[in-house]
Amino acid sequence: MNTIIKLRYIIPLIAIVAFTLFLKSCKKTDINVPIDKTVEDTRATAIKAIKAKYGDVSAGYIVNVNKTADEIFYRNAAGKMVSLYGNSYNNQPNNIVCIYNCNNTSNPANLRIVYTLDYVQRFYLCESSGSPAKSTVSVKWTVSVPFTITDETPDGVLNTFGKVKFTPSSGPAVILTATAGDPGFTYTSLGTDPNCGVNTLYSVTYYFNGVDNSNFASGTQLDALLSLSNDCALIGYLSATSYVSAPSFNQNAYLPCNRIEKAYVNPNTGPSNCATVAGNYVICSYPGGSFTPIDYHQVEYRAVTHSTSRAWGDQNQTVYYGIIPGTSTPSAILNPSTGVLNLVNMLPSSGLWLVRYRNVNTTTCGVISGPGGTWPNTALWILELWNL
Image 1 (cartoon, one colour):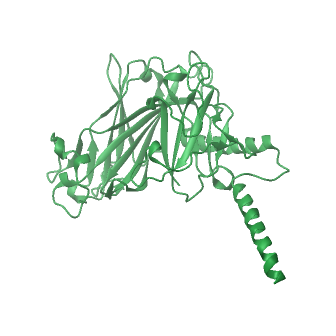
Image 2 (spheres, rainbow, N blue to C red; image 1 turned 45 degrees about the horizontal axis):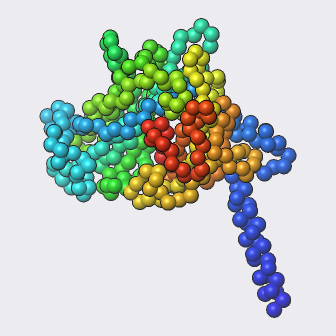
């Protein structure tokens, strides 16, 4: 009888201790490590991950696009690239019933193939005195396709590639091409498309380094296209888009409220392999001249819970702030020059997560709101999907 009574007190005590340890699982708790050293270590790991992916970059900003390709092409039996859906509205992929794949139909137009240009990013390279002004350009797509992406078609031709085109207000266009196998060209499965069970979602990104800054003059039109080799014989193992247009570069992009600056999310770089998010100028100082820096990023994240939607407002999970390293203190703001936050819930194998962020310049725009608050002007904040 006394043993049973003791267990009644001991078991809750064990549960409390276990829960406390769980809360601390993504923070260093070594009391011999000063808080500033913890921040320094976390920041150093984040910088290493950023440099490995983007190189030596200072500021970067994102041109939001979120447009689907108007036209998709495939390779027919004669080996020619032809339009998949033609000009008929009823044949566009969003109106196609998702029951067909490459093996259960003989009509290519029954397939639902959607290419969405998410955004284009520009990164200012760290500059030394007297060096030419250069930038890195990153292009990101999300595609929904009933096939598996491959580097090349069965004939051995590298037909997986992406292009970006700069068309100035006067003068010739500049076209750059990145091919599968190039450094920075990646395609990553995001799992089954929640809106089309026979399709797989992929994230496709590619980069161009050392792009001359003359390509970013005010009024320059930006376009991108994507070609994907695949394992679908029905479409000749190849599909490609027409050019998708992004907004022209803003002549006032140097102003903090006219752009979205990059915040760097890095999986597996925080304590216990949680994700971290770092500020925009952690590697070198921001660009000089008239480029006006921001005061902060505001960063929030939440788990994806909706079965078919990846929109921020459709999820019913808690909205989190990042945690300042070495503490249990959540922070709504991220210092772009020195800041790093632990995203303690974004652990390996924890599923799909949404991270959103925006610029804050306290004298001009971006008043900090509470977790999950309404952020005005969706064109001025970015939403990233992470599959851990």
